[in-house]
Every structure is written in C-alpha cells, then in structure tokens.
Image 1 (cartoon, helix red, strand yellow):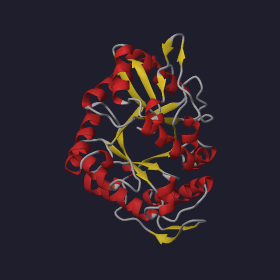
Image 2: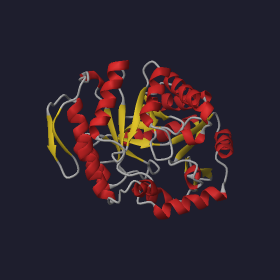
Image 3: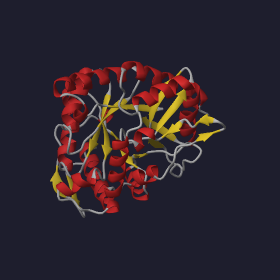
Length: 330
C-alpha cells in the first residue's frame, strides 16, 4: 500500500506560519511512513513547485506529488522542473495530472474546453513530459493541442528518479486517459461494497481517516473537527451547480446512513459541508482498517489522505494501515 498525505494550502494558513506548516506536515508524513505528499494547485494558492521545494528541504525521502494543471505551464516546463529537482536534490517526484479544476478558474484563464476533451489534452500533454524525461531525444510531436519539434531536455533525468503518474479516474474519460498513459487512476470512492474498480488495473483512492480505540471516540473527534455548517452546505450546493466534475456529482448524490444500528464508517459530512473534497472513514482502528483492506483487495494500491491536522493524527492513521496490511487478502 502506497500512502500519500496532503500538504496544507496557503489559503488556510496565515502567511507568517505557512512555511513552517508545510515543513511540519512533511516531517510528520515521513515519520508516519508515507511515500509522498500531495501538493495542490489552483488559482487561489501559491505555486505547487515552490511548495514542493519546501517539502524536499524539510524531509529526507518524502516525494512531492505535484498537482499539474496543463493550463498553467508548457509540458517542457514541467519536465524541466522535475529534472532540475532531481539534479539539485536527488529526489523523485510524482505527478498528479489534472484535466479540470474549479470551473470559474478555468473560465478566468479563457479555457472553455469540454470535460472529455480536457482529458484528451492532458493525455497529449503528459506524453510529451514523459517522452522528455525518458530521454527520447529529440522529441517531436504534432498533436491536436501541442506541437514540439526536436525538443531536448537537459540535464537528463536518472532513470531511477522517473516520476510516477496519477490521474483522476472517476469518469470514463479519466479512466481512458490513465490507461493510455499507464498512470494510476485515482477515485473518490464509494463504500467498498459498492465500489467498481477499473477492469484488471490497480487504482488509487482519495479518503480522509479519523480512527481511535473506540467508535464513539472516533466520531466525537470527527464531529468536533467537521461540525454541521449551514453556510458550507449552501456553498457546496452552489459549487455543484457550476461543476462538471464526474466525482463531485457522484458524491453529491449520496446520502450518509447507518447499518445494523451502527454508524456507517463511510462518511460524507466534511464534503457536504464544503470542508474538504473526499469521503472520510470513521471508526475504531480495526473497523477503518477493514475498510482500507477491502479497497486494497479490490485493487487499490495507492491511498491519498486529507490534510493532517497534527502529528498524532497521522500516527493514528499509520496504525490503521498497519492493521489493514495484516487484513488484506491480496
């Protein structure tokens, strides 16, 4: 099981505290056994490559999982960033390739490309990056969206630092793009019993976790961290109206419930109150570990966690994954 945490966003932390917050979460994540850390990108936060530099400097082996929006930079610039970080720090990065984003962000940048076509564009974009990094020089492409002619990348990237590639796989277009690139398709999952994994391929899931020794204690912590918020619920509904995101629509149609007189460990409260963008698993360590193990048995090998509020919270999560590895059957 490959685990990524998520770095804080600049919009959520005071400027004077932000660098320290990023460095702290990077150290906590590394100590908890994470492979890497997701670094967000959008119009309202600082540049993910600069945040990734902070992550690298604050840790010994943690790999930034850099969100890459094709609208923001040419594919050559992405490849140049990757090989430059490898040259300067000897560190591997992962790429979280985006096809969309907040609809208003895209419109502000003059991008009105339809949903499925954005995935076709991202596929072409990512292939140029990978060809450059693999040393297929010179790279010449005459595509529908990008054209390069005899392009070379220097300094070359050591083969062992070739980045892993992740891409949203909640829609048919996303799954097709991930398959074409050999990338890990990442889903915002349904409960394990309802999840339909991609045919014969490994995939990733984006989930938050709150786990404690008892179910009651876990729910107390979860509800204190993510209380009911009427303003957030209204904002969520407004965001849904302007979004063409497949996963956003899927999750928004779901209703939380209970089973056998117990709370369902799969919880959408934070998502419905516009506090985060992924489902949560809540319960005692063994119950949450069983959910993780079921995802793994379906083919989920990559788990991307929500932003951790503390070192202690990541320690609780590490305990869950230790149990999940013991329970997994494949």
